[in-house]
Length: 301
Image (tube, rainbow, N blue to C red):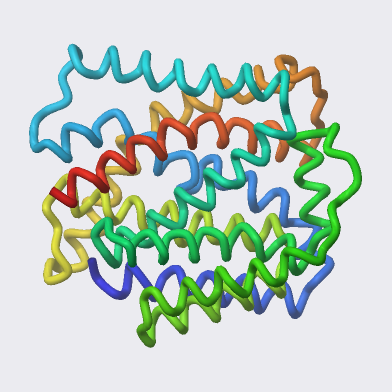
């Protein structure tokens, strides 16, 4: 995929958000929850709303109704099961979400660089752990306040001691498993982003500009057989088609958001909708990550 879309666009947004946070720290802190919530419509939820068609694109065959119906039933059953578990065990469910996100985001980045292998595994673990551990290592109090939005019974924050050594291990895995100039630049940029910006702003930026954006680029390559030599206009046309395709399921997904607070016995207001939105992302991430893992294995064959 073109460097302008794969690297330049995410890097520019990350640098811009970091600069704004340094120059205007208080507005950045106040706007962080709203920025994160905006991912519901801007790439975040839409990148997963294409999932029903991904198996067909991967197998190079149309996704007919006879396939889509059981697909939706299985997808929703996995999500619903996770949501019911969350209602009874919010803290373990939240911790599982963090681990799942680290794995999913890390391996998604790894799949842009490598096919499944030991180096793919190490790079994925390093990248995903880096993004998940850095908010705890750099902004423990603010990050724990987000954890409490998902698991109100989580109690006081843990000791900050283990997070920095764990972050250094993740950083080493990230750099050593895929040594290159562009990976070093991206890793350092991510560290600055995660250190200098509020957690919801930095993680939201990674979610939208790196993970969701690159996933859509990968889907463009998968569906339309795009290559890095194709003109930029063909890539942007393919991306626009994917975003249009995602609109119905994105809106349907967000309709479920209003049912999560009463189901979890919470009453969010304003930016406190971050908690229910994170729970929604969590229960959708589980089947989405399973599907992407299947795609990774198919592309290994």
